Length: 243
Image 1: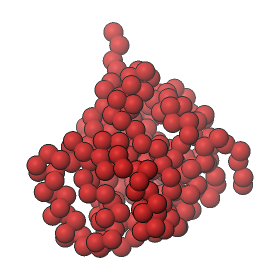
Image 2: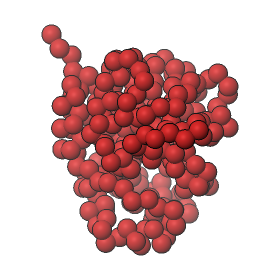
Image 3: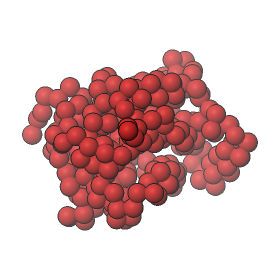
C-alpha cells in the first residue's frame, strides 16, 4: 500500500539493500556496539514500553525483545515490517504503518521513544523530535551524525565515501547544541551523548577486520577521542519533572 507521507526515509532503511551495509562480521560489530549502548541507556527501565519510530530495519527490535521490553515499531509503508517479520517471532512486537511526523498515539503513551537511522535523512527533523517527545512518557533515545568528527569534511569526502560503499545516501549533520536545544524546547532535559566510533565506519568496512577495528576503537575510546570527536552519537534525554 502506498502512502503520501512527508517523510519516508525509513522505507529505504528497511530494505535488504540497506541491510547489506551491516552484513558480515564487521556489520555485526556495528550492530553490537549500537545495541550495547542503547541497552545500557535502558538498564534503569526494565520491561518498559518502547516505540521504535521507523524501526523496520530491525536492528534493535530483536535485542529489545530479548530483554523483555514491550516493543512497538512504526514504518512509513506496510513493506517496512518485512524484515521484522523475518527476524522476530509473531506476537513478540506490535507494528503500525503511519506518518512519523503525526504519530497515531496519545501523549506520553510510551515509556521510551526511539529512532535510529532516521534523523539525518529526515527533512523535517525538528518535527520528528517533537513527535517523539510528545508520545514519550519518560525518555527519548536516537542516533545522529555529529559535525564535530571526521564528518566536518563531509562535502569533500562524500563522493569518495559513495564510491567506496556504493549505496551511501546523503545525510544531514548536527551539532550537540542543535540536539540539546531541540530537546529542551520540547520539555526534555539536556541529553547524555554516547558516541559509537572514532574511526569512520567506511574505514572499518574496507578493513574487514573486526579484531583490528575493536583494537583501534578501544584505543581511541581509552584516550578520550571517541567521546570528544566520535560519530554517530546515540543520545538519551529524559522528560523534565515539573513541580
